[in-house]
Image 1 (cartoon, rainbow, N blue to C red):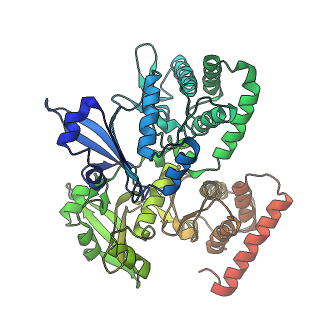
Image 2 (image 1 turned 45 degrees about the vertical axis):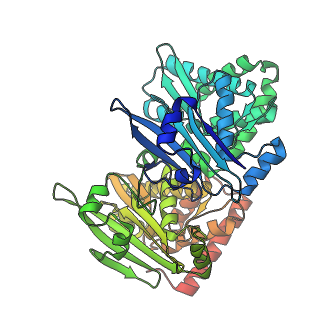
Image 3 (image 1 turned 30 degrees about the vertical axis):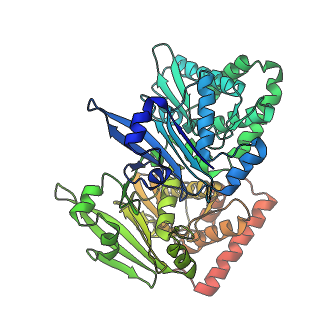
Length: 561
């Protein structure tokens, strides 16, 4: 029930590093975490020195607890008992046989019993960068003929992949890596965890792959002309010109469905400042703690380079202490003598379920509050919503069932919470002609509505969407930067969301200062939020629910101060 594949070119390296031992790969702690957003699988970047002194980069993808659902589904539809690592290996070998580029596999290990687990090591693609990042950073500097050649090459390579019998339903733009060459572009594909091998790809499968690519390319970086170059090259290579109308209609339908998914927007918004401001985290203490490398020296100088030290520290100002959590403000010293403000949240909880799991050596039954807030911060930033900068987070499950966690974020300097900003920046409501301040207030309301609309469109609800969780900075008269904070209770839902959206909007309306925000402002907000000029009956029903919730909050909690 086990499988091991080693690339002959790397056999000596694999043996010296014990890469043929699956348990060793699953417990490996050296390396840099690439995407710390999933509790069941990880990707680590490994930097290994060579004989000539140069470093070689490898990526370790591991899943210590592969769901049986994944394995059984593969077995039912293809007759193969494959884990994600084995599936990705077979897809990459198939692509290489068809003359298409992809990461070079070094080692693939899998085990099916008693619990499926797997690991895959690939060599880094030298000189390549993700397509979405290339377009976000350099797209505006590239000449139109260069971009046209890039999208034509992309369409050609996609057609060749489909002709090779590889169906990649999640072929997002961050799964295509690009390298410029003298007369064109070299492309490579990766991320085949959910790919399938087929003898022949039908219309729906082809449309799904094309839609995944187009949905994750923002019109800001790939306009209609570039998309047409991709489609024309694809149709010309695979010979589907006679079914182009049918194919494009299915692509449009699939694209609309994908744009309702959070992950698509995380990739689509790569060119935003919030996305580009993210920093990869480093692992400490066997994955118990993760730290931004830029802040690691500052934490070490303060003696906070371990999970236990952070949880026990009292070097700061305690803002709040409850039975299960504490809030602290810390000052992190810089080498130049200045300090960086940071907010630390410590969480402690205990349950019988976690006690049983701890005794069996299993992780917590559900992610800790610290991990949840760190994950929400990363995901929202990737989606183009400005949040706090994540400095560090960690969690530990003790043998007695005590689950400890923390999250440390950078202070937002120069920002003011929305309700205070409204009182400080704008005068009380009055009658008469509109002033410059009124126009600036209208612009602020439109921006806050845009953030709330985008937040909800991504499938999130905050559960504490009060004005105090919007932080505002005025960069120029009428131009604002808005950050969303306190993300511990944020949830992501695909169904039955209306009551949670009503609650969020009612909380925002309840906490807005009545002496600054009147009915006209509230109507402008809801129209910006709904993106309509005239309210339809369904919009009015939704607004009545928000108003009813708002009135209920005022009856039970009293007027907001």
